Image (cartoon, rainbow, N blue to C red; front, top):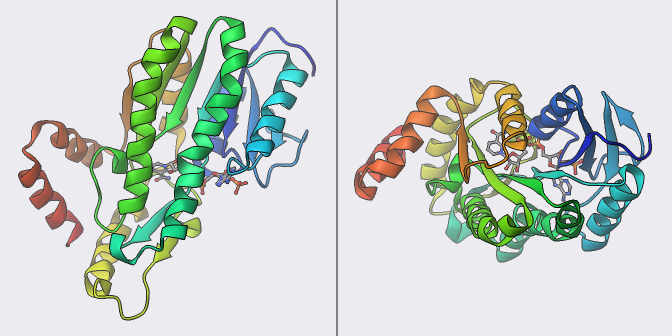
Amino acid sequence: MTETTARVVLVTGATSGIGLICARHLATREWRVFGAGRRARDGEMVDGVEMVTMDVDDAASVERGVADIIRRAGRLDAIVNNAGFSMRGAVEDTPIEAAKALFETNFFGALRVCQAAMPAMRANGGGHIVNMGSLAGIAGVPFTGLYSASKFALAGLTESMRYETRPFGVRVALVEPGDFKSEIDAKRRTAAPAGSVYQVAFERFLARRSRYAAVAPTPEPVAALVEQILNDPDPKARYVVAMPKQRLLFALKRITPQKLFEALLARLLDV
Ligand SMILES: NC(=O)c1ccc[n+]([C@@H]2O[C@H](COP(=O)([O-])OP(=O)(O)OC[C@H]3O[C@@H](n4cnc5c(N)ncnc54)[C@H](OP(=O)(O)O)[C@@H]3O)[C@@H](O)[C@H]2O)c1
């Protein structure tokens, strides 16, 4: 396929999990979809998605990937900044280098893609940016501090960009998923040095947390929400998509005094 009149979207992190399901879903809905990832093979067509090799940690890789999409499709209407990974462990135990690596992907990766894609979207007269946040970006979650911080950072970026890009017709929104089945658990990095003073509490947390992951649904609701946002000429800033209990819990964060919310979350997570 070359130049197209269909709207063109780039989904990062489209080789597994939420991004894969989003990319496939959009490809069935009149979008021309480019799906990116380090494992993606350039030019390969998978389930209607054109794959692009891209490491969001690497500025040259992002610039080359975005330029290649624009060369192939002649336009770029939307990006879904979904590439990311998770990390657990006590904040005190997390090496700075590990924390930087997490931000490199979850925050700076999204920033790089935004900066590379904005000129094309401005030239088009508009577009959509959807950033993949997390419930952990609404409330700081114990033993998930650096991941929470990276998603809070992405939320701040999203809210700030909305003012700046609105005059150019570019709408920015944040999707905040609860637990969904993906490769995130298998790929998660952990900072838990032997002999840590946090070991007992961390293990209790992990045991409790694994109960939620075990019942996590597959990510189709996230894909449907992303499609809804991309079709909305004026989307909201933030959208939660989660199992009912998780949705209720994080809705309480907005209306409950912080100390009460902390007591509730501590009880639920056994910390
Ligand atoms: N699943 C959940 O419960 C959940 C909940 C809240 C938020 N999220 C967020 O949803 C997003 C997707 O996660 P997921 O659950 O679908 O996990 P996943 O199955 O592990 O998918 C992660 C995707 O990100 C890509 N990726 C990771 N590092 C990358 C890099 N440096 N450059 C380019 N691509 C990279 C991976 O592709 P390659 O390995 O091919 O590079 C993969 O396609 C993440 O931002 C995550 O924080 C997930």
